[in-house]
Image (cartoon, rainbow, N blue to C red; front, side, top):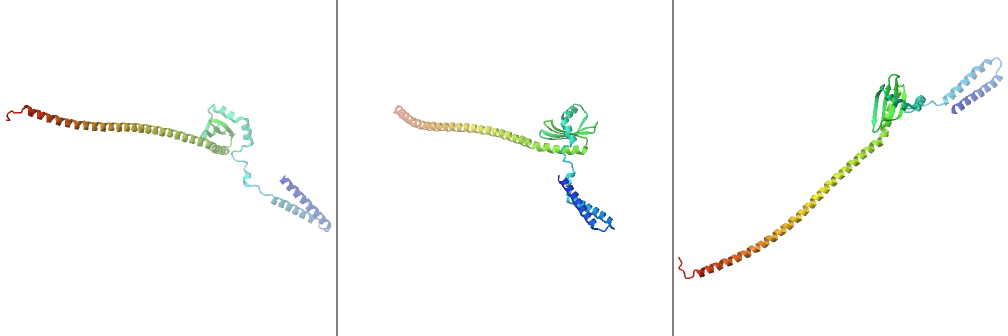
Length: 247
């Protein structure tokens, strides 16, 4: 719409200029009729140049059709026609050559080559199930799409890889908790045994002390009794031997 409006404005300006020149020519002497034509052409050309100058140049980026990940009309048509089914059918044979493959978690990208037709198949897959398949005979574009798919597989796999690592870390932590708890239980059991044994030893020690004290008392009493009996024996001996000559 902007371009059409500018064209109309240019035409209108040219008509106005031509009309002005025509009026001027009516006042110009008849002996100089050829002067009006160059002036009109120059004025019209200047108007066109002004209009072209007023139109901004397209950015350099617009010269490229699209990024590598955007499908061309032919590729979109092929993709809609069933590139996935076509590639799956071709994979049953041995005519495809795997040029590149990138894995990121369960995601990945592959660049396959069908030499008989010089055709490239670029795939984006998950768990070895094709997600997108682009078919092209342009080697440069095939490489560009492959790099884009490989980057996308890495981006898609970030959450999966992070989840996998977190699951492993949690499982490791749970295992360490179980091992630590088992160690704590063993130490608790050892401590309970030690305390029980210590109580038993303490009781045995007390009983031993009590027994030793009792035996000491019995020994002291027995020694006193022995001395008493020995004294009685001596006295009786003296009485028995009383009046007998002494050697």
